[in-house]
Image (cartoon, rainbow, N blue to C red; front, side, top):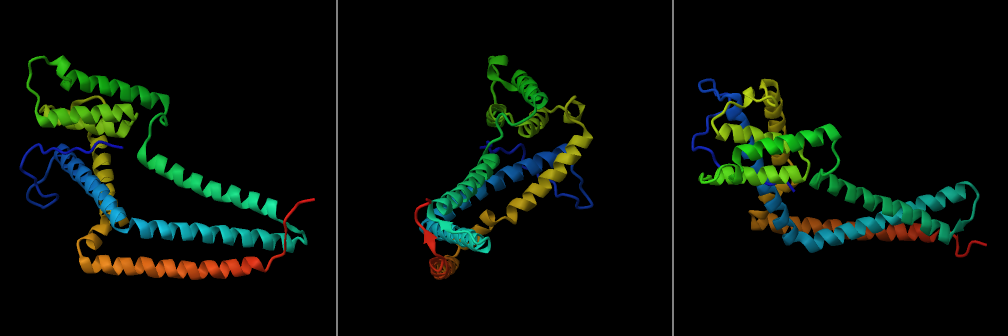
Length: 267
């Protein structure tokens, strides 16, 4: 999981595109990274709180959905056999459904893995670039490279961020870290060989899009629910109503499935 940047470089935040004051590209980048990291942390905390509040209902709903999927797929399989004038064998049906359901769970695990880690999934050239930039950052801010020098909390946080990005082979994150390190050292990032105005402009656009995505996502919207007892009560009722609807639907699927004649043993 990415290390969130929990630091503030200065107390002055210049309004974006206000017509009077205009941030430099580096200032905009820094402001947006800090905002994005704060929102990521809030989103994670909100989601954990939401799961703690509604966890049992979420699990029950999920289990019912899976049962519905199993029966829907079983019905489809049986109907296909009838359409081909073929008998329905229980063992073949079970094997077919198990394969499809396992594929469903594998998809969920793959989505989770992709969202949480990127280690060893980047091209070799990018991996080498991550390694090079990590060494450059180490030369700039690693305590062993500057014996006797007092490092600020901001600098220590950036070093931890760089280590985390390096361990995950995260080129995007380590590039962001390098910009922040150069900025904190009062050096102009765009004079660096890896960073130019085009890179910063692209990152600023991407950061704005990511921020918009976070604040409009379901996990972040859960905050409105958790902040209100009335909203919590309404959400609880919605979960219970959906669970009852799924139970009713499941019984309908079971009844439809029971209409098929299934041969227990394949001869």
